Image (cartoon, rainbow, N blue to C red; front, top):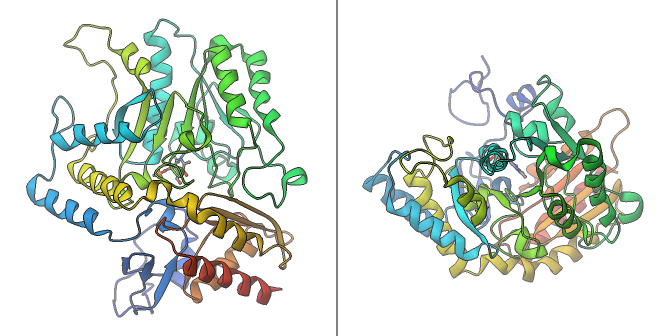
Length: 443
Ligand SMILES: Cc1ncc(COP(=O)(O)O)c(C=O)c1O
């Protein structure tokens, strides 16, 4: 039996099979978190850790934000659960109305889920069912992008493009293809903000249209800014070009905004930041500030209306979850929205972005740094991999930063930063300064 030497507890660490974790490594040297407030976590021993990743791209308003805490507490006492099928509760409708106020014009329907992965599955099903509902049932093909991350369910890993997330799980969904990714370090390394070169990568969709014929393609799904694959940004003009190609061929465009939603780029959504409106958007994480699991799909009016065509007593879309529009989640999301709006957090990232950009790009020239990427309050620092041990260099930096009281995240050999949007300049100095020290010492 493994016991945790770092807590007083006798609790064994054996039974919990941890997600996306090197379980054996972790259980030998556990990294435990016990409390959180504002920009910080505290370990069970009381050590303070600065959160450089908003938990996991979730906690945009910082931890234990008072309005959200109060909303959840009050809701738990008032009504813990309400069935979402054929029944409603006021906060679900109020939240949908409030969300529409900050969505891009024309996107005005909200379908609730419980996670980013579920939002993706919902959007993919909605896209296929939409074409069928309007009498175009041959449009079943789904197009993703290399290096894309769309959660871990079968639809999401099928359209996703991260090899490790796919290779263990069989043949996945049939009828899926991928356009190429937009990472082009040869031309774009060390660019500040969106890269100059690569709008033409969107034309890869034309290649797939030529191969499969547009009449078989339901939708294309992309992350406007990709996080899990190591912070990959859309080249200038790329998203506009993708939108135009989709329009030309009657293909739905889905933006997976699970990490970009709710102010991450300095605008409420990536769609509003880039001025490109997709047909469907998937969100989660920041929707409730991470406090209660919740996701959603946002749809354009005409997509919703296409379903509203059968006998009125029949269900129009055979899809939903027991916990869709969970009262605690709705209460948390309303508290989060209030907080975001009152504190200006949906746009605060735009004010802080130049400072983060300067701090990050000052790391150029440090040992092993081969690229630096940034947008809004997102930063990516790519390190040269150790020969034969991909991912190890960045993971070692993660461990050393943790020891020094700064929580960062790594994917492959890229350090990905996504701090709470309440971050101050001194926090940026501490996060980036700690990374710099660790990189210098690792040399
Ligand atoms: C772009 C994107 N889509 C989907 C997901 C999956 O979300 P969840 O882990 O809530 O299922 C993530 C998670 O990081 C994500 O970054």
